[in-house]
Every structure is written in C-alpha cells, then in structure tokens.
Image (cartoon, rainbow, N blue to C red; front, top):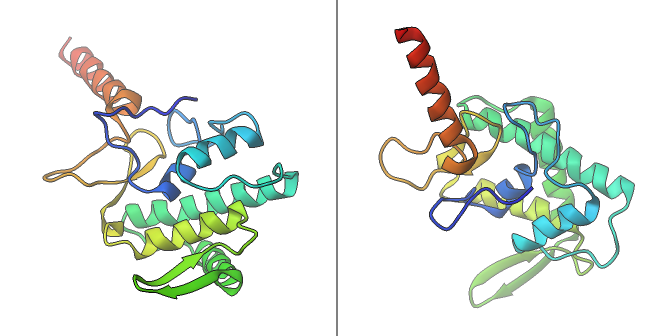
Length: 187
C-alpha cells in the first residue's frame, strides 16, 4: 500500500502513529496489514526514521510487533474517543515501557537526558520508545481517530479540526457517501 498522504495533506503527526496505521482497512476492521511481508513493514518503519534491524525479523518478532501495534491501538483509540484505555492494555504498555527502559541507553548531555534503544537497537525497543515519546508529547491531547477508518493522527490544525486521516484516503469517500445519501433522501 502506498502512503495516502501527499505534500498538501497532513500525515499521522508522529512516527508511532504511522506504525499503528500499518493496516489497510476500509472501515474499522483492522483485519488487513498494509504490508505483505516483514521486510515490507521494515521498509515502512525505516521511512519513518526507525533504524532497520541488522537481521530479518523472525516470526516471533513479527508477532510481538503486531501485538504491540494492536494493544497500543486499542489504548490510544479509547483515549482519542475520550475514554480510559482498558486495564489490560494499559498494563501491557506500561510493562513494555518499563522493560525497554531497563535496557535503554541513557545519555546525559548538554541537551538533557536522551533515551535510546539499547546498543542492539531492536526495532521493538525503538517502537516502544517512540510510544513513550508520543505519550509525553505536548500534542498528545490532540490525538484523533479518523471518522471513516481506524487510523489515528495528531490534529495540528486550528478550528474544528480534522475528521479524516487524509482527504485522499477517507475524506473524499466520506463526502461522496454523504452526498449520495442526501440525494437518495431528497428523491
């Protein structure tokens, strides 16, 4: 799947949200990945700035990444809807962050504390640290979910705000569906 955003359209607003959005659903199903293979996922993530693993992802590593993705989606989707995340989802993410910090590389320098993945730099660790960064971000309060699909994004606009992940992916379809519904109702 190609990235639906263009230069004129805003993206997800955070690398971790781009990871969460690696599904190609047309609705709220989240049943199909937007990549065919593990190298396809790695390509998407390296385009977002994550470091590629030195070895190909194993089946268990892929399962771990997909579990992280869906658990984080469940928690963040609830938050975007104004609800508290489920207890089990919150505990899973808390434990993941704690585990990564136990192995993280901490560097104190002129810019303050920098937290990085362990020297092995596993992709899972990078993603969990990115989640931690998102949760601490000043923009986290602007987390939204697309009204048409399950993609999450940071609404950086002024005013009412975005309703769709992008106009080309969901906005145009939603507007066309709304127009057809009004036409049927008027007829």
